[in-house]
Length: 249
Image (cartoon, rainbow, N blue to C red; front, side):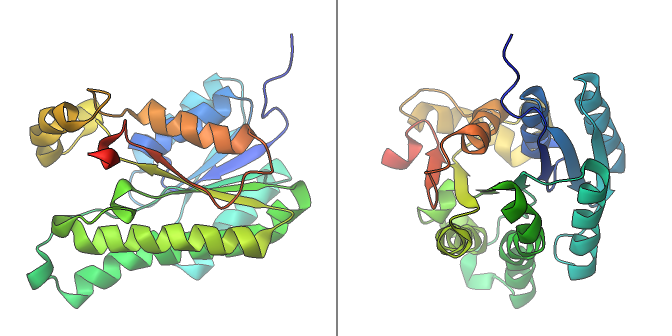
């Protein structure tokens, strides 16, 4: 029987305790990778995600880390490499999402979104880069359909994801040829029981609008990340929209 594609490799998933981040971490573990996740407040969920990864026969750890903090990011990278001896895959998933009218958006809310959604991936990628270069590693950012299309009710979030998409392309050029950098940009993702009240109210409406006649799932995103983690190293600087065709409407 052939080895799993990520056997002997290690991955770090920011914001990997819950929701899409947890699904990504488990998909990487199922593919053979040892997995570290970061969390900020979801300590219990992080412990459960680690246990689920270990149940697959992998080494795993959870690291408290605010991706906006340079010292905490450095410590998270240090712990990951100290535990696994290497770093092959970085998934920048940690993000901040909220709804706010653009005309009354405060500077504080604008900055809070950009600090997590753009500065965070920049910091984590920069600190991980020396280790990823040693392993011919992969970086995968989690963007958004909002980074490609105007979302007036989430303008600061959409603008931050557009910046992340641009950062993906810049990193791909700067970090080549040793490291690939790509981005998965989900559309409407149905998080089931873990979805917010506003998400539950809109789920049916978005499914009707989507050409594939359903909403996306956490696994749709996780499998897309897995493609970039295991696919050809000649693919870099790409934004993969995972939206069932919603962006075509």
